[in-house]
Image (tube, rainbow, N blue to C red; front, side, top):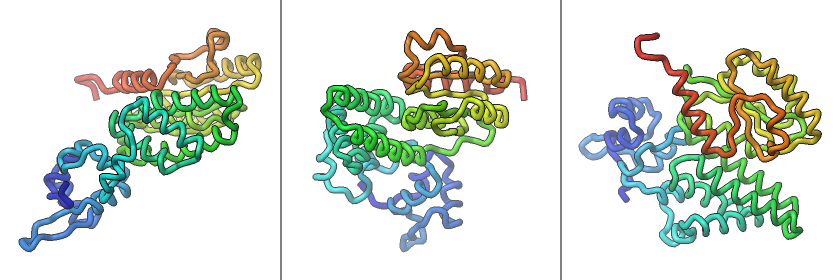
Amino acid sequence: MIDSFTPKQVAVALQVSESSVKRWCDQGAIRTDRTLGGHRRIPLPFLMEFLEATNRRLVDPSAIGLDPTDLVFGHGSSMRQKQSLVTEEPAMLTQFEKALLAGDESTCRKIVSNWFAMHGGITSLADNLLSAAFKSIGDRWQCGTVEIYQERRGCEICCQLIHELRRLLPEPPGNAPLAMGGTASGDQYQLPNQLAEIVFRENGWRTISLGTNIPFASLLSAARKHMPKVFWLSVSHIENIEQFVVDYNHFAKNLPKGVMLVLGGQALNEQVRPSLSYSAHCDSMLQLANLARSARGSLQPKAGHI
């Protein structure tokens, strides 16, 4: 792999114009070296520095000779380091679960990054790695072979890693539709809510995550103030089902007109869902991503209209 690139190569990798890259170089946004002939060259560390500072990602890494493992482990990683992680999904899942239970954030980061690079998005990572690992950990906790602190620590690690991945996504345009959401009172589960937020963001939405354990009255106040096109509610835990149904349906009834209410979460079983009013329900992040793309497409201006 080469260590520095021309502005044209970087432009193809970023899917922007060459003139934009040259302008960023001249403005100092991308640090550059110069050849003896005075031509710009962009070393890989300087390019990665630019990506970090601007929350951009490489759309076509192959344009500068990078493959997913280069992106995962970074410039200068040895082949021995690259071979330390398996690449078969079942083995990666097993290794990830072990790393979560051990509190090994470094290994978790490498596996999450590798999975993300392999699949090119968040949905497989969410559904087939994170959800699968925590389901297994939950089953082991029920059997008494895992301590609750191990599960909680693993959640904290994953929340941090998802936050890091979020920074790699391009900033949505200012006119992108807004999605907002959170969890209701008594529901402290951060990870599913965080995943819902990044799925919308990955699919071109502006997002506002309200966080966890928010009273319905406050969720409604936020929706009325910001007027999102979509409001998601992540429901992983319900303390009192009867009270939840009453409070939720009052919230749903009083949402501003035109707001799509989207539900998801492990607590929404077949006994609870029939009592709730909503626009859409998603059983997976893949379904949520499909909904986000479809809903965003329906909001695009039609031909002949401004």
